[in-house]
Amino acid sequence: MKNDPASTLSQVIAQMMVHQLSAVHVGFPCRVISFDEVTCKADVQPLVRTSDSEPAMIQGVPALGHRSKVNEIEQVYRPSLKSGDTVYVVCADREIKNALNGQVASADTERRHDVNDAVIVGVFACSL
Image (cartoon, rainbow, N blue to C red; front, side, top):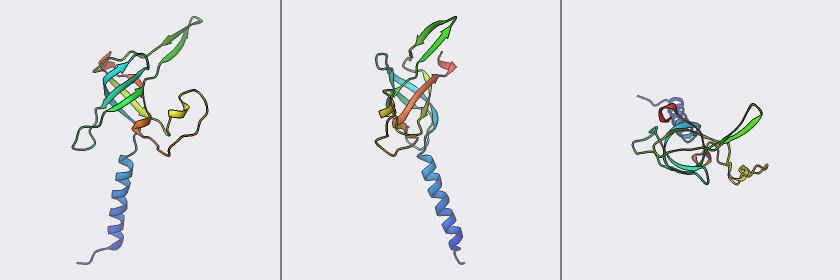
């Protein structure tokens, strides 16, 4: 039986694509391990397993706050997370570290959709 080079190449390319796409992170649920109310950053444990081992904890993930106006009265809501809360985390398109001061900035790295640029966007209702 003769090997088909095109079929072999197709399989290799498909495996490479799966490997590359598994390195892209968009959004996933996590459990809060700890939360610092002063910095509004949390250490979180992803809850979706993508391999045989436990997912690595992500440290220092900023949590979004909210500013709302009701009846012309502005209210600022800082995040209040508790250990064990289930939160939703998204990973920014590019590195966010240099932009967190509110100024336009260039990224120091080429990383994209990386867990180092994760942000907590909310708490699942099961934790409220």
